[in-house]
Image 1 (cartoon, rainbow, N blue to C red):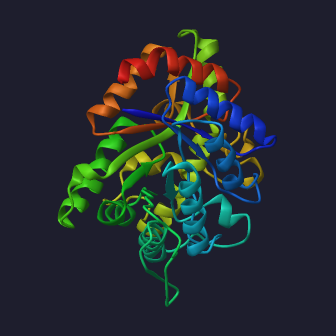
Image 2 (cartoon, rainbow, N blue to C red):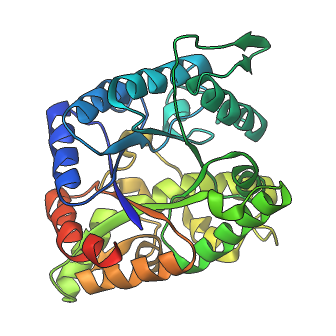
Length: 337
């Protein structure tokens, strides 16, 4: 099982680079950043610095989208980084949330996302692709490789991830929902004639390591991670709008908690203390995130690995970034190697 660290690109960028270097030294294999150009600094500039100052870390977006950047620009950026640093990137991509909504645009359609997945990968690996009706190729690419991992929640998106993507990103760490979604992705891959095991499964969620099980420690960790239920709720709200609140196609365990959701201000997106996430109950925080002493994290990782999860990407948007990276390096990553 591999581990990645997910950060926002808040200034100063040097802090992001330093924490990624620390993560590599603690055994993390991947470094991920948000891609939301209005809310945070430009990630690809920082990716170049991360790659320059690490030796083995693979760097990627968690996640980009097919709307805010032209596909050939996305492909060329990844291909340039790969040419400079040796095929050490992954393109995580989804329909778009904060990056498009803060600019007054809707998320991309699934059809457009599917075309983007294929086009970006083909271009970055030196093959021809059709972008908005025009055949393009990056003639300077040599021996390029760009895995494209697709973020998904709903039935149609899960099927598309299985059919087209190199990896599937699930942004929550609930064991029951992970089992349901991994099965959906792998079933779709098999129906498409692909090897289901060839699709990398990445679970991405906040992790907060406490010193024990004291009520005060647990309560503080929950408050530091409650923002995540609000972020997931944005995507779940889209599913409810599309499939209905009681659809047989979407598990009740995923949709029930957003009934009290009343709005969302992206000014607080992905940050602890987000006032728009008060509707998220403790039970959802405990299920979607990984909170507690090291043994609790190990137990969750083993359960996820048993479901076929290959990669855990740890969101560190809280007040214990370094401590969590260090705790995973000492207690979790060696045990899961």
